Length: 160
Image (cartoon, rainbow, N blue to C red; front, side):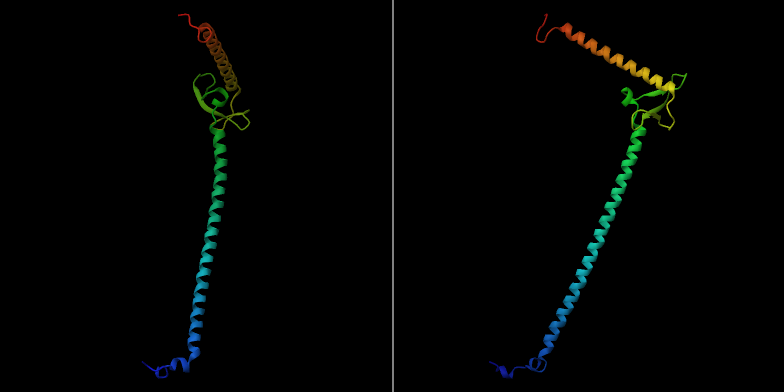
């Protein structure tokens, strides 16, 4: 067994503060590296947050543009079927052939054709005539179905 006094203790006796300095230096380096890592992580988080905000803003702007475009397109493509009951081609004046599809505007009062031109009075008269025809047809169909029901008699009653 070695004697403790015979051991090489020069490092401890001659430079006892060297280890302390080295430890402090290592701690300082670790702190500096940690600080750099934390700063880099915070900067990355800031960049990602900025990117996320920018993307969210772009998405909101695109959604707004899409909503406006859909509204425009909706009013362009909203066929007169909402007025009459199904798709409708107005006839050209005097020819009887369908000319162009037309649609309703926001308030549903003014009709505008797909190419942007206004609907003529003749076309509006024709539209009113078609509306009236449909009303009469539906009323006649209701009366026929009511008459057929009455002819069948009360429910559960059979003439057989």
